[in-house]
Amino acid sequence: MQYTSLKKLRVIISIVFFVLITLVFIDYRNILPEEFTRGVLYLQFIPSLIKFINILSLSVVGFIVVLILTLLFGRVYCSSICPLGVFMDVVSFISRKLKKKKKRFRYKEPHNILRYFLLAVTVIFFTAGSIYFILLLDPYSNFGRIITYFVNPVIILVNNGVANILENFNIYAIFPIEIQSVRLELWIYPMLFLILVTWMSFTDGRLFCNTICPVGTLLGLLSGFSWFKIRFDEENCTLCGHCTRVCKSDCMDFKMQMVDYSRCVTCFNCIPVCPSNSVKFTYKKTEITEASNIKIKVAELKNGPDKKKRKFLSFLLSVLAGGTLSSFGQGTDEEYKDSTVPEEKEFPVTPPGSLSIRNFTHNCTACALCVSACPSNVLQPSFNEYGLTGMMQPHMDYHTGYCNFECTRCSEVCPTGSIFPVMEDEKKRIQTGIAKFVKENCIVHTEKTDCGACSEHCPTKAVKMIPYEGDLLIPEVTDDICIGCGACEFACPTTPFKAIYVDGHSIHEIAKEPEEEELEKPVDEDDFPF
Image 1 (tube, one colour):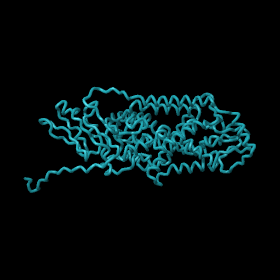
Image 2 (cartoon, rainbow, N blue to C red):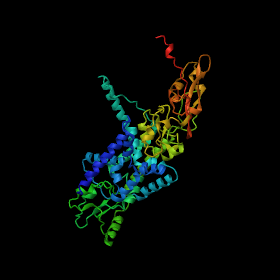
Image 3 (cartoon, rainbow, N blue to C red):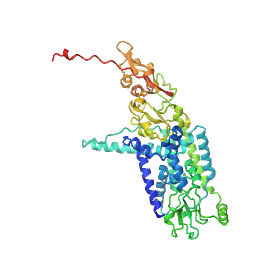
Image 4 (cartoon, helix red, strand yellow):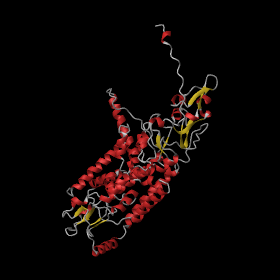
């Protein structure tokens, strides 16, 4: 293969991965099969690593494939497989097209203290059992939140507009979808992250990948040992500088004829622009003489640390941290309307298949794929339901929806193993929580009127209506057969607090089989007069 064809190949692979992963997140009709979703997300580094640790299966070793690719070809994951990396390339491309003066990159010293500090903190927290920094910095999960929070609503809005237009012509092939709003405070971090990444990409290419992203830093350490590398042909190099001007990682120093492989994302931009064909992607090692080592040391002393860039990054990080902390402080003094008895939930409800709150919160990276895939919109990002370290991890919000009795979609698409795959029959008996009835909130008690909405919607008939006063009936919950699906809570008409609500289990249990009601004995055919 010609060296100049490598960039075209990289662009094609990048587009394929970006489009497929985006399709997975915008599949609001759940058209894509489970196998397709798993295949597309197989090589996403952090989800694959976490899932492998959970189930120790060779079927989820995508992260090992990424490590092997890195040792062979460098950071191809960052350049082509990571959707956030491709997004940054798109922003950088737009930046070059919009600016009258063509954007030119230059070699810059790496911010090693910051990048290795963030990697070390992420690894230490993860080893200690906390996924907090991965949740905040994982590129795949942040891309998923950007698509789910900001792109999906726009697509659904367009879908609904087209559906309304076609309805006028009696065409119902497309039907409207309800747009579920996300709590405003949960938009703060994804919005700040989107602004940060867009700004960095617009002004300085892959600065985020080589400064903040822990995955990029980890793969950068390994890329120094990769077999194939971008190398200079020192004898033919004319020191024209074309390669450095197009290096979006700012890692090529044409004067010293060297490449910082820890930051090179193997984008191949430098190869086709070299007029002397002196930049090559090859496995042949170039001998570095003592004089070459001296040149590198002199370059490091000459350039020195980029203080302006460090100040710039410090400012961005302070804004990001301040925004995050401000989001933590919001919502704690929320004012409620007068109500008889507030809902007192000891635990939030995690999805069926998550096994326990601990398993879910320790493995969920809050990529929001289950949120976008949930057909009833019951899965919503949390704010403080799991505490501050679990912000944005999904929980079952029965005020916005309920868990369909026969749906297992979230367990099918989860890439990390925080929600294990469950069969439909198995899911129908997983008890994620138990419904609690508050008589003082029920309109049968307060307004002396018939209701029974909770009993009508209960799929296991754990909620039954029993005699109350006169001809009135009031709900009663049978704990053994309740699965905590939330259909009763969602159907309850009382506001702002429900007369019946689901209190989650810290560890999921198995509900008993509901008793089948005896059917009336069929009338003997001989009894019919005709």
